Image (cartoon, rainbow, N blue to C red; front, side, top):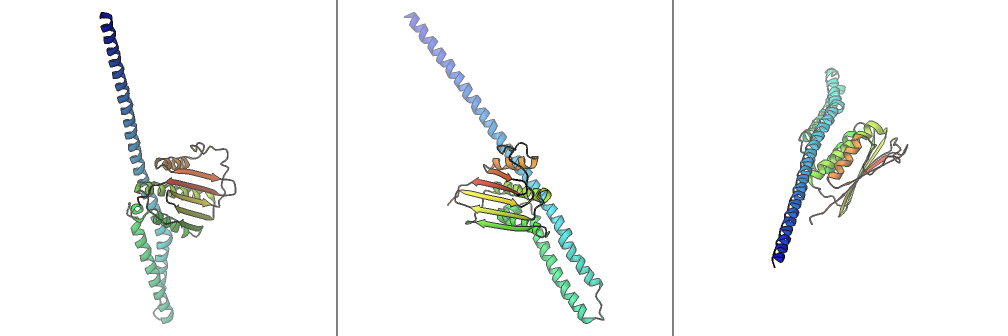
Length: 261
């Protein structure tokens, strides 16, 4: 009888210890998961902040370039017209006045368009598609690229955080094309499907041999491409880059979505 009681006590103590160990392990695992979740949330917030700062910086560069290349040139023509006006020649004078009015109207409209971009939240306010169109228009104005932009399906807005990160990826892709690709054409296609949003950006530049570089985590690529890949992963988007020598480069983003119909 005494042995049975002792055995029962030992079993109870063992079960109690086992329970405590399991509880400690469970709480430890729970705390670890919570800590990882908080770290991921913090990382995501930091990435969003960094993205917004980079968008703002790129926007200011675009504005500076636009003022220098377009508005500055227009106002210089107006100044030239004014300096060469001759009241003794009525017909040429009227032509220069009319031409100056047209140029000033264009400068005012360009300044209005630029003023919208000074708002750091313009991507959120205008939406992803309009923001991409603005970037492409800035490139088109240089006269160096044939730009094509196509949207398929009924357009819808994505989550604001997704739009910010996707837009920054687009900016970086376009910057890489201008800086490295030696391209003359840029094609951008957006597809709005019920369960998938897809964005493809292709150029006809030099391209490169990407066959020997693993595309799983894009090791071996430059920091910019790895950053784009990592940013895409943060919003659960698939990032795919394909390229070959003398055949251009295509970057495709595929984002699974859930529409609230």
